[in-house]
Length: 184
Ligand code: F6R
Ligand code: ZN
Image 1 (cartoon, helix red, strand yellow):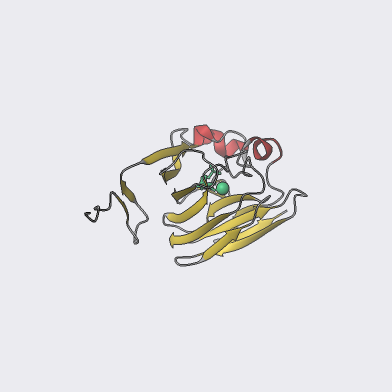
Image 2 (cartoon, helix red, strand yellow):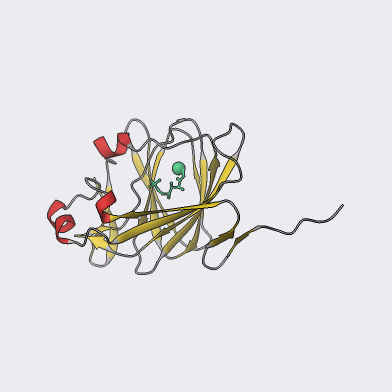
């Protein structure tokens, strides 16, 4: 029997994934209608502006008991005073949890439960964040460089974006005097 060579690689410095079974997606401002609070600032910005990219190693597809490993790259920027961020979601299978960890940059992880109570944790390189089941989660880049965050979650968790598109989070992270502030 031979030792099989690794087919997929994770760069610990940049978070970039390379090799087999990697899917990539990106979100530009035009894909994020209704997500940012300052509609006029949103309309004034180039719709093609890249907000974030996600790389996922999909060893399996949507099977119970499986896992996904992903890396989110959120670019620095703001719409008005609101930092670039992910759309945010609950998992479609609501009770599934997830780990996030900081790789590069500086950011905030916003949590919200089903009663719309919110809380937030600072993300820095090396920080580890447990997102329990039934909790919506969103990444916010509050720094001036790329925020890169690793993630691992059940492959049958799915995404429910509709709840967030319709009702949003009950708090936003806005820049005030060069620093992130939570606004309810
Ligand atoms: C997977 C997960 C992350 C996000 C990614 C992009 O459950 O939480 O991989 O999918 O950070 O954010 P969304 O999916 O909210 O656009
Ligand atoms: Zn998730």
